[in-house]
Image (cartoon, rainbow, N blue to C red; front, side, top):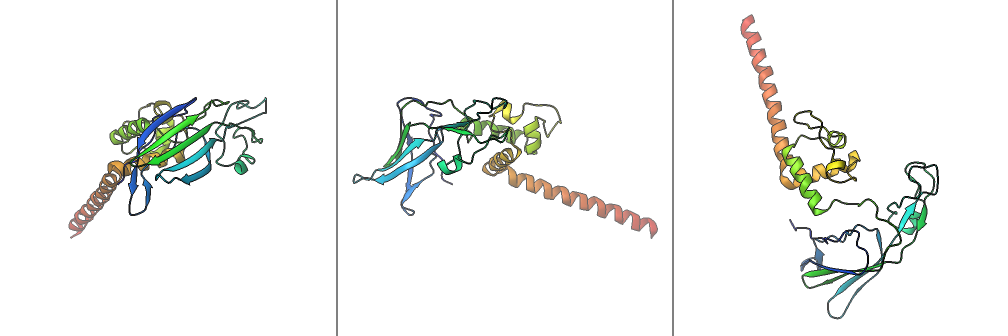
Length: 232
C-alpha cells in the first residue's frame, strides 16, 4: 500500500513554500500517494507540463460563504464554500436555510511536481477567516487510531456522544478530543472504519464475532443434548 504524503501547512497565510515527498508510478505514468489538502477550499485555474518535466497545478482560493440573516446563530461566520462557483450559488445556511453570500478571495496557490518531490507555493493574504477543515491531519489520524485500538468496539454514536464502549463510562467525544469535524455520525463512521482497516482491527473483530456465534450455537446444542438425555 502506497503511503500518503501531505503538507504540514494548514490554512497558510502570506508567502509560504513547503516541499514534500512524492512518488511517480512508471506503470501509471503519474504521481501517486499524495495529498494536496492545505485546509483552504481551492479550485483549479490551470494545469500544465513544462519542458523540464515539471507538472504544475495553478489554483486559487474559493474564499468563504457567510449568512446575512442577523437572527441566525451563524450570522457573519465564514463557512467553507462548496467546491465550485456553480454550487456556491446554491449553498444555503445549515441553520436558517437561507442562501449564503459569497466572499471572493484572490490568493494563489501552486503545486509543482518534479522528480520525487512536490512543492507548495502559497502567495497572498486571505480576506476571510479560517473555517472547519475538511479532513483530519496526520496527527489527528494517529490519535484516532490510538482510541480505536484501545476501544475497537466503539460505535459512531458512542464516539459522537462521548461514551466508552468498553466500560459505559462518560469520556471525551471525538469532536472535543480530536477535531470538531467529528461531530457527524456518518463522518465518524467513515473514519472509524478506515482506522480499523488500516490497523487490521476490523478482521479481528469479525473473527471474534464469528467465534461468539459458534460459542452461542455450541451452548444451544449442549442444552439440547442435555434435554434429550433427560427424556431418554
